[in-house]
Length: 607
Image (cartoon, rainbow, N blue to C red; front, side, top):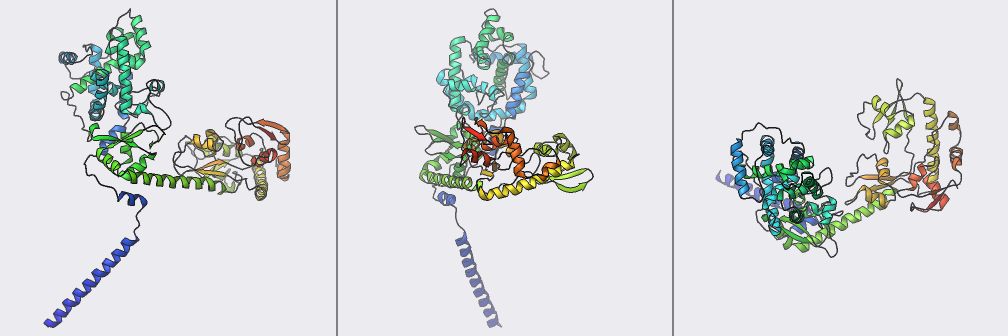
């Protein structure tokens, strides 16, 4: 019995060892099949730095949130300084606090009923907003104070950025003023702020604050009064000097306030009210949200090659949104590289340490990734035009009977205007029949069409068939008669694509049924169509004629006409101007081998 038990134990142990060995070999095989990407292999060689600086998601959301900016801007523009606000703040207590603020400030802060009303309005409606703004101020105010100290500008002017932009470097006003200090384009250029396709330094906290500081210093040399400097920052020095003249030569803000533009009348009180709330937030129960990362916990590194925010985020294992928030002056989420110029990127200090310690590997990966994407885009351009053989975009409507309605299946390139023209009905009628609220229609959707002229539709369909037959025959002899498509790659926009293919933004939007200028990466755009444009037939008799004779009649209206190419023209847009004329015809008559035409070039039509 004992021997039997021992043999069972030995057998079990042997089985377990065999199973463990097989499991180890199996797991080894699995591990061998796992292939590391180039990015992972690069990152595996990085020297790690374990500093703990992090930017939490709540703080990042606050940095990009524009709701405070929108609300505060509207408040300042519409607030009524003459209406008393019911809010618990005794007037005598407010006077004492304003007097205390005045003693330690170069601003002349005096009590008046208008200022009291603005302060009480902010306390009643904006407590939550100011709690969030105080969190942002922990990051931005040290930047402002450093710049103002260099120009001998009062540090209290840091509160002006709250009024201007709600501390959002991406804020843009209706007039186009941009950044923390809301510089207009011309003013930004005047103070040497760089603005181009990749960079807008009006959104750079350091450089824009330095420019604002320089402006404040110059205006004080003119007016000698900081309240008037603020008024000039809002409405311009010209409006301030006009107000001084209209007031009879008075030079205090509260004396000339009623002669200033309406918005400026509420601007300085809003600034002083903001200063009051920051100074006495504890007394009013405003608890600031604390920012996890301060400005001194970040640093900059010089970038020696063009790289995208995505590449940096992938390499450093950090959110792309975090890079965007710390570097708001880069408009396309790309750090460019210009010969002879330096560009810096701001990162948390631990990420800067990783970047600097592994620069060689980082730039090797960026070059690899950029070359890979460039090769992919060239292949897309090379092969996309050959992807489709030309066929007319017009489809024969289905003959499904549904009372007085016919059905039309929406195809690529269709829009409600083209469909309405085909059936001689209005867009509003199509929308009514199909319960459409907008002009957008999805490809593949069947639309109900009610037409009173079925004979015309049949004639049109007959011509479509013959035209399609001719088109397919022509394709054998003319391989250039193809639809041209283009796959959107990184860095593209409608303007650059239109310029590349000699067309216009409007034409691209029409061909692709786009309602805005936004295009997604990887989207396939129709650049031109080779479908033949013909006149609408006027009777069923035309259906019995050949397409060749029809084209000849249509073209005979403009025999031997010359056309001079205008800026933005393409062969497709020109062919649309002449019924019955195709892109192939124009190329044949003018000896054009490709679609390269230039403004001023003379083209023979129907030659």
